[in-house]
Image 1 (tube, rainbow, N blue to C red):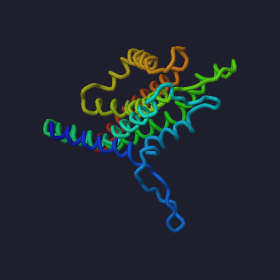
Image 2: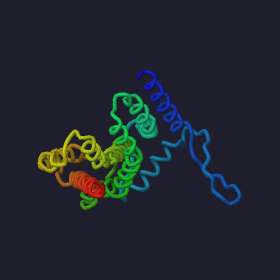
Image 3: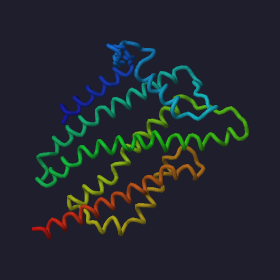
Image 4: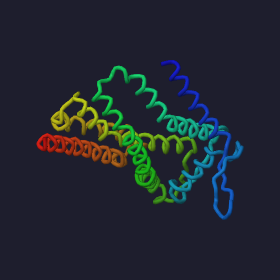
Length: 254
């Protein structure tokens, strides 16, 4: 276990170092723009990602500011650490599953193998959904009040980066809800009835979770998070029901 943890931290550290020390630039080769890496500590990958987030997500007339020395560097480091963590997730999953594999039954092992690719795809879908819909609309909603009374709005760079990347990671993992529900049911730990009988309690939990993750206390913007979570739970119920129907159909064919 220690050896696996060391490998994970080494890879995560290398990815973090790359993001803080290297930049990406386009080099024209035979008429094609080819991305290349070069050493540039002041225009590194973290800086380029922050610039992309700023241009895509911050509403008009809202400024991104640094209110104390070092905040820009801290934001870059946070971006690098998150990229290091996300980039290491495939290795983390692999090392974890290899470690617990001897304790799994054959059918449990098959279920885990089936979930690996959907897990990655759902994580990417969650990040895309958050980046294109949830974050822009949430920020626009929060800062529209300032625009109405014509005051200057600004977002401190560290808070902006932490909020944005946290939302991306949260929705990346939130999109695993249907897959987790299916895997738990398929392994026999709970039945399909469990998810239906406890839907009220789970809905309350998701609403509370949405309120905790909301960047303000208005009670309105939390629904930007809560509604997608509730829809994901409904998708999990549908996936379980569909899998159950497929199983019944296969048994009837036999």
